Length: 98
Image 1: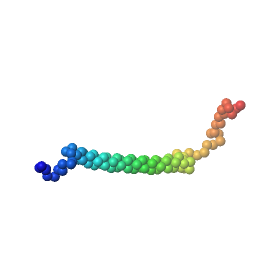
Image 2: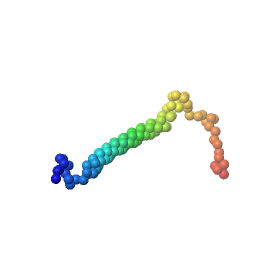
Image 3: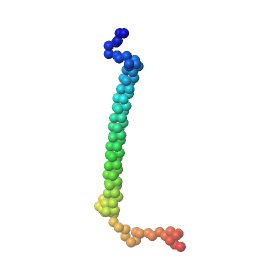
Image 4: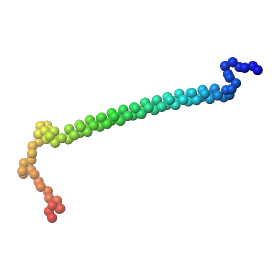
């Protein structure tokens, strides 16, 4: 009986393509896992950046709406003063009149 070099008889011929296919599929799956993990990390970074920006904007909004700042702007920039007694008009609603 003549034996082929490098290919034992107890391995069926289809085993080598199956091993190669499974090896390539395993490598491809691992690359997909790495890529997906990277995308998840990027999304988490974007979420963190958005939260940080949101916190900064909330703080800026609170500063811009502060009564002290608005009063200072009214007095200095717009030259406003509290109204005189004759400038105040009181309006009664129907509910308050009853």
